[in-house]
Image 1 (cartoon, helix red, strand yellow):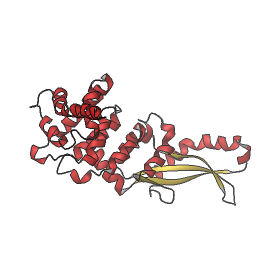
Image 2 (cartoon, helix red, strand yellow; image 1 turned 45 degrees about the vertical axis):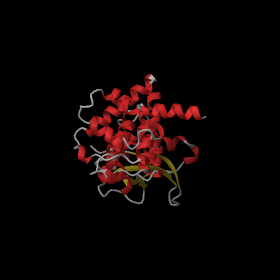
Image 3 (cartoon, one colour; image 1 turned 135 degrees about the vertical axis):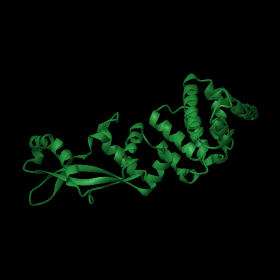
Image 4 (cartoon, rainbow, N blue to C red; image 1 turned 180 degrees about the vertical axis):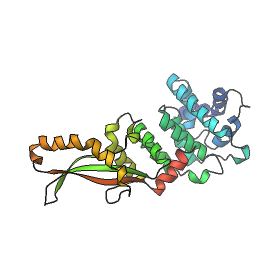
Length: 266
C-alpha cells in the first residue's frame, strides 16, 4: 500500500512539468495565468492522474485540447486578476478534462474553470455547477444555448378532449419552435431534455402561463394539427374526442441564469 501511494505522489510531482509539455512555451499568453490558477489543485484529486492519462492517446488528446481551450480563455485576463481555483470546483473538473470530448460539454467545464479563475467573475462560479454539467447530456447542453439570450421558450402540448366532460388524454408534446431542435442529435427527446433541465433547477415547464403573443404558438399548432387529428381518428379509444392545444412556456430560472453566466459566458 505504501509503495502505491509513493508512486502516486511521484506522479503528482510531474504535473507542473506536464503543463509545460502541453503548452510548450511558458511565455505563451495565458500559460502563466493557467499555472497560477491551477496551482491550488495541482496534486489534489484527479490532477495527480494527469501524467497517467497523458500516456493514453485518447486521454492525451482530450486533456491537451481542453487545457488549450482553458489557456485561450485566460490569455486576455491580466495576471493580477487571476486567482487560484477553489478545489471544490477545480478538482472535479480536472477529472473531466482528461476524457470529455463532446464540444458543448467540454466548453462548459472549461468556461466554468475560467470563471472560477478570474477575480471579477469568481462570484459566479458555484461548486454545485460542476454537478449540473455532470448531469447534462450533450443535447441538453446544446438546448441551453437557446436560453443564453432568452428567458422564455414557447411550448405547446396536444390533448384529446372528451366534449362537454373536459376529461382528456395527452397526445404529444411539448412541441417547440424548429430553431430549438435544429442542432440536437435526438430532437425527439425534447420532452426528456426539458424534464431533466427542470429537475436540475435550470428551467421551469408550465402550462398555466404562456406568452401574450399568440402568433408565436400558431405555427407550432398548425404544423402538428393534421398528424394529431389523424392519430385521434385511428385510435378507437379516442373516438369522438377533439384535438385541443395547451399553450405554455419553458422559463429560465434565476439559478439557470447564474449557471449560464458561469458556463455559457462569452
